[in-house]
Length: 401
Ligand code: C5P
Image 1: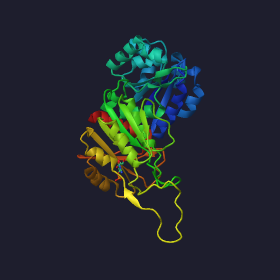
Image 2: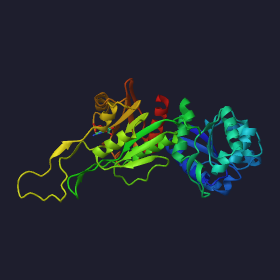
Image 3: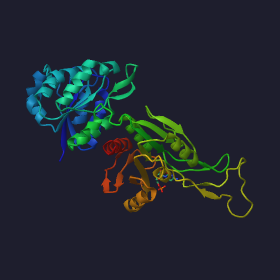
Image 4: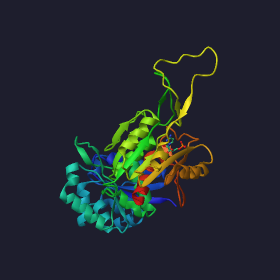
């Protein structure tokens, strides 16, 4: 059944991202109706929000009957969820205190539908005691929160206060609509605070001479997204990365390596950890010798490439004396995905295997459909963006730790 969201767009620079949110929701089969506050309409126009939702955008309490033939109470009841994005300090304050002086705040006061806030404001405003008090009050009243994120802010400062990205908000909306009780993980607190996470990502590169190497197509995107998602949940993250072109995720310690042997050494150096997520596509083999000079093509005889086996990093850490409490491996397969993943889980001594079918465009692509294989069965997740999958996995890790 189609779900319906009432989206309140407040007056902040992040309002433009709410237009992307409308599109993201509609891709997921969720329709939106928009209330644009007076401040919100300084940043986006009713026309753009209306074009994206295909519905009249509501802007003023007193025109409501005329515009939509619906009272504000009816308006809030017709939605499955109310989303406030961006939720400005002012909107949060008014909602927390029951002030009802425009359509947005009146709707928030009149509703018994659950509300998800995506705060967006300057870091000092976010950290202000008054704002934190208001957030705590709204939470006590049953509101949910997604974000804010830490990062560079439009005002030139750095810190927490950036509105969560549209796909993160859309994930939270879906989770809220499904009645996900782990939505606590979306709140501004950090459930993995004090926990250490180790993540590997990207390919390894196994040189045979100064100009040639063996490698694979891994982009590192999934592993980087997982490192970011764990850091967002408050974990202290070390990301051991093979050669990729991605920037280091915010708030993550990154160690760049080339070969599997180097990757293993960097992982062992990063122990102890509470969770190890082995996402890297580690080369199983490496050239037996790395010559200093470029290898010449032999006149005749076999190709001059002898291979030796690389260490298995996942298995080594799974059997380690400092084994992390939760060890998660990945299995990229092109056929018999689950059968092979189950066997791999046992063989590698890990707790979960995240299996994915890489016969399509997963490697290097932006989307992934994952199956989580645990000792008590499997859980298939629909195809979603790699960052959405990473956040979902991070929430599972929160539950397990
Ligand atoms: O056996 P396979 O290579 O398919 O296993 C994949 C899993 O094992 C991934 O989690 C990968 O990071 C890990 N792995 C590893 N070291 C290797 C090979 C794979 O950590 N040498």
